[in-house]
Length: 48
Image (cartoon, rainbow, N blue to C red):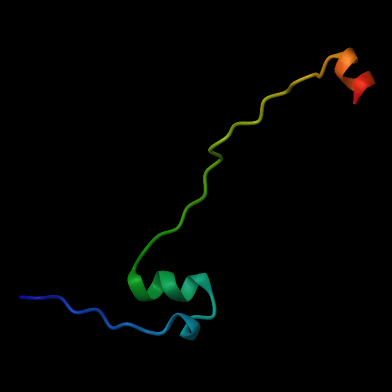
């Protein structure tokens, strides 16, 4: 049996939460680039 989705115009959604509810999706954020401490050399700082 085919599944039909009810489509709404993009402008009908006012928040991301409305889209998530309508399409039953979950949104998660992750830190893809970890923070790494770095000390620039004194020469670089002087020339900069």
